[in-house]
Image: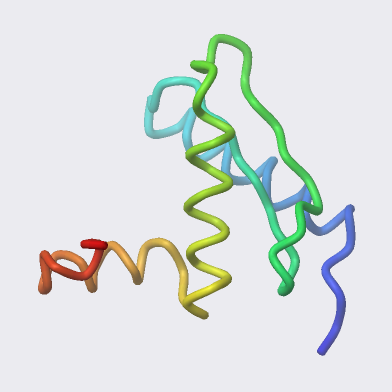
Length: 86
């Protein structure tokens, strides 16, 4: 498996932030993890709340741990409300 580079991670963040601006989403944080759950890159937009990076890291970590995108996990949760229950 090829390793995620810092350049690739930063490109992912750039594109995510550009898409968020296009969608007029409030300022956010984006965290990109490698396949072991380690942070490769993280950025918080000006004006983002203090928890945005924590939320982004949690979503990214959950996606890595479950082997699925956070979008796929959200879709699973729609059909099964107990999916996120502890």
